[in-house]
Length: 293
Image (cartoon, rainbow, N blue to C red):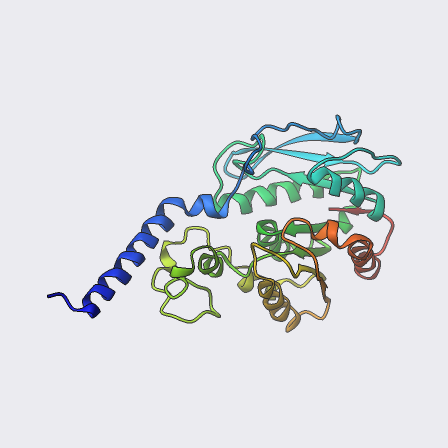
């Protein structure tokens, strides 16, 4: 008769093997979400339809992938925005800035398939484009990243101390290695970042680790951390750990919590306090009337 211990060991082994199979097969689908459920990959709404002045910008990443972007220009009146463009409308009004929105490879109208290396190249191509424009103040470019965008923005800001004036992170994770234990709890003992327990023997399977916790301490520019305490995707403790790591070496860090903020709506639930926080950060660390995000 097979002992209960053997059954338990077989069961645990089966779970680990199943987790490995899921991780290998579907990890990109967990990390990268080019299309939100219920929406199409094409753009149902453009800035023009919503009365925003904008420019379609097509770029080439360093490996030749064709990327699509919107450069949305500040102008006196902006109305009727939906989805993410609603945030852009308010950003234009409250912060008096231009906004550059990049679709990573595989997202929107951009070609290719997402990967960490590729997306880092895409972000660099976007920054290089902005740095060469003559219609903006290139000394005051601010990188804003939410969730995965915060991981991308951290790498971009660290790599470009001469081109990026400041960084804003909102609801960003410490690393995908740490998020594996959040998305697939039964893997948390075999996959994890530097601060997690366990042998972490399956870390090598993660193709896009996005270890923001290792990058953020190398960022020398001012950093604003915006944390929604009701975030249902990324545990708010991740933002606290990122801030602690950055602030240990960078005295120009600001951490602000929003008690009712969820993963995607912190800007909305935060209301006036959210926008005043960013405005005050700009006034202190990126002074002048115009900013480019």
